[in-house]
Image (cartoon, rainbow, N blue to C red):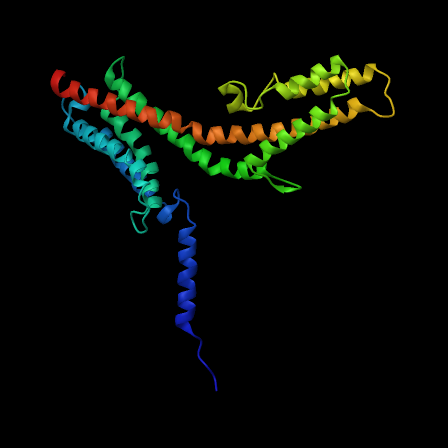
Amino acid sequence: MATTPNKPAVARKTGASRQRQTTHQGFLTHRNMYWAKLSGGLALVLILLYIFVPLPGTHFGASWLGYTLGTIGALLILWLTMLGMRKRAITPGRWSLKAWTSAHVYLGLLVTVIGTLHSGFYFGWNVHTLAWALMLLVVASGIFGIYAYATLPRALSANRYDEDGAITEKQMIEALRSLDRQIHDAAQPLDAQAAMLVGRSLEQDPFGGRIWNRVTGNYPDCATHSAIVELRALRASRQRTKDDLLGRIEAQLSRKEAMLERLRQHLKLKSWLQAWLFVHVPVTFALIAALSAHVVSVFFYW
């Protein structure tokens, strides 16, 4: 006897598949880019209003539309700052953290349009233009933050893997310490000149350097690299024996240099992943202060 397919089971399976796809959807494309479309539509409407609506007065910001845009922009900026508090409560649904973050990104871009139109393109050396400039800086740092979170975690993961598998930051540090111990023991029979070169590598702090070195991953004063170059020249100037001690130590220093480069790349990527927040958050507070001064000066001294 023929049997009919189990349609409810198929429907449940399809629904589960869609739910998984929704779960793995990023915040930039959340709900089919709902907030991007909404923000883009609002921006277009506001630009058309600015162009075609006749308004009295010599300064656009003092018109009814200018005040409306200013009020909306100020309230929107205050709402955008609430994302940090929203992260403390992770809930599903329309106002999940992913939805809130998506709205934060696209409404944050909309603020630049609202703020610029509110200014009426009147800029000068005053607190009003300062608030506008800080707003752009906050948005720019946020854009960099999106780029960082979209690309750097993948690079961090790739840097952790090699032919021997994955290695953590702690394991990188332990590997460096182990290589230092091996180099130290192997260098005991060296003469004073060669021992001095090796000693510089052992004494240098692998985490030393300035902030610029950490952010760029460039360490021009790396003692390990210098020791390898000078030991290689020293080996070339001397007659090599059957037991080439300098060659073995050079090989160990080369392994240490490779691990140093890997660790420094790891720290550089971590720095870029976190550095934007050191601009985004403080400048946001500076923006709120400048915005408050802007509002007070407009209503009491304009």
